[in-house]
Length: 127
Image 1 (cartoon, rainbow, N blue to C red):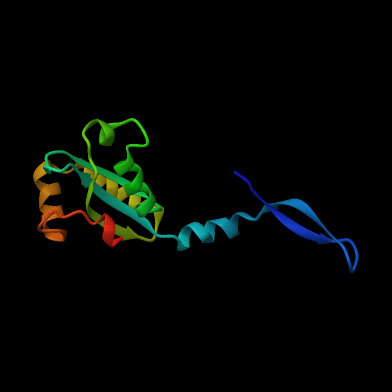
Image 2 (cartoon, one colour):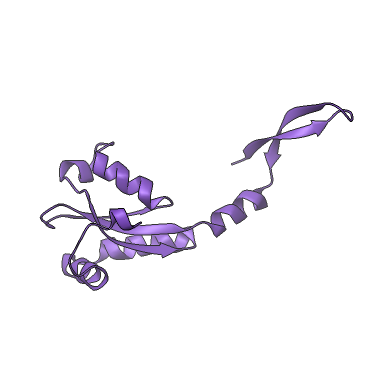
């Protein structure tokens, strides 16, 4: 997949023209590697249902869940409370961690959340 950006090209000393250039893979690859990725768990007011996800922008994603922007599990079960998150630097590690948490039992997820956030308070305002 090629990414493109506008780059000024000098035609002469006083004028410049914009052209569309393909960005080298290394440039955007290093941007991804330097980004932070979040694995998070959302729950409802009564802490009865749990949802695990992964994102690059935790504040935005939690807001989307709270606002019920898209159809799905979190909207159906009213999961609006962010109770757990981890920060990882590699997208593959974040996806692997999400899968590891999802594969665990409910008891393991509750223990994970309880260790991180004993009162299961909403962490949205703290991120």
